[in-house]
Image 1 (cartoon, rainbow, N blue to C red):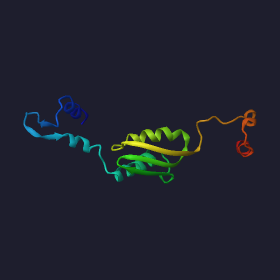
Image 2: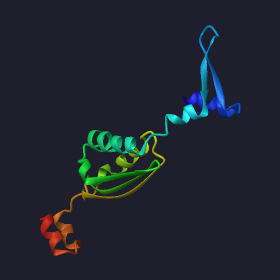
Image 3: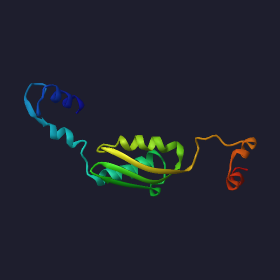
Image 4: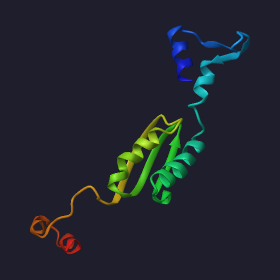
Length: 135
């Protein structure tokens, strides 16, 4: 597919003839045929993100993240379990066929990137509630 697109671009053509090994014409590929691979219904994109990316790939609960797709633009809102999977989630969503752009307003329940505070650092934590949680 990628090579066909490069050939069409290089030769400024709107179609390519497809031939067999014997040189016999098998068919024609158009630019529209190539784009069809990437243009998918919003519902199919949403299903793949919820089922495959959030649930299977990231192992997160898809109920915690609302996925909206309009004209290939994905909007994610909600909360992931861990901060460390935020970047991976965005990369994986962008890689889904048909996704044009991703907008995300995602929080996280656990900051697993920061190192836990030691007893000598608790004085730096301003909130008494935070201090109780950390001790």
